[in-house]
Length: 107
Image (cartoon, rainbow, N blue to C red; front, side):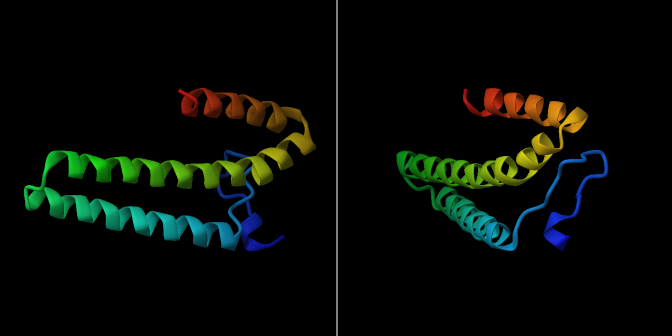
């Protein structure tokens, strides 16, 4: 088993990790978000026009949602699929987890 497939949380038997390309993509996205947030800070310091600053907040929210989508896809493709294939309590747990995630993010 590759290091990216090791169980990360001992209390969660279905964690499969994040493949290196996905991890690199997420880290790149998060670095971009960090830069956007720093830019917003500079805009506030410069007392830029509020709608312009708010537009940047919207861009940060969109970038975070895109990163969430990547991570959710990884979870469904790897962790959830593995747990459901294994069956038993892990499958029951991940099915409920998916329902909870969808309820939380589809609002």
